[in-house]
Length: 147
Figure 1 (cartoon, rainbow, N blue to C red):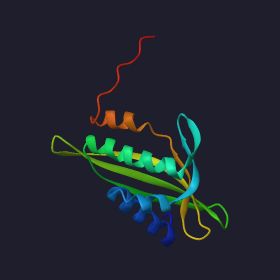
Figure 2: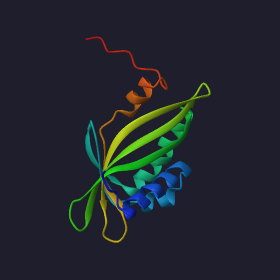
Figure 3: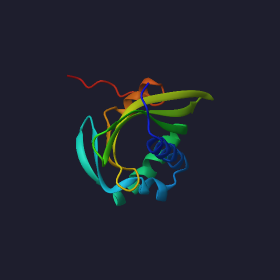
């Protein structure tokens, strides 16, 4: 069994709580001033002040699709050195559609700076969330483009 340290477990428990409550001061305190974000389309540096607006907008969008809660659970932890830890996590988002629960699951990878307290300095999500939501019947799928 893979061991998750208490500091990392506590961090993701608080990360989940703050995300569900849209507690922006706590959410922002869990990221470095700027962090690297990667997805299937590429990578970019995100500044904390821009991230705050994006988090609020994203939460509002998910709420329109019936988001009830989300949970980020660390499933693998690897200390890279004395200062950085790689964490692979399972993210489960619970939506309600037509009074029925619908779960959307995805994998995410984080690198936490562990210097003073854990904070996210790298976040990778290779999933196309809208595609996952479409597959779960939460959003209409886009028709394939003519070739």
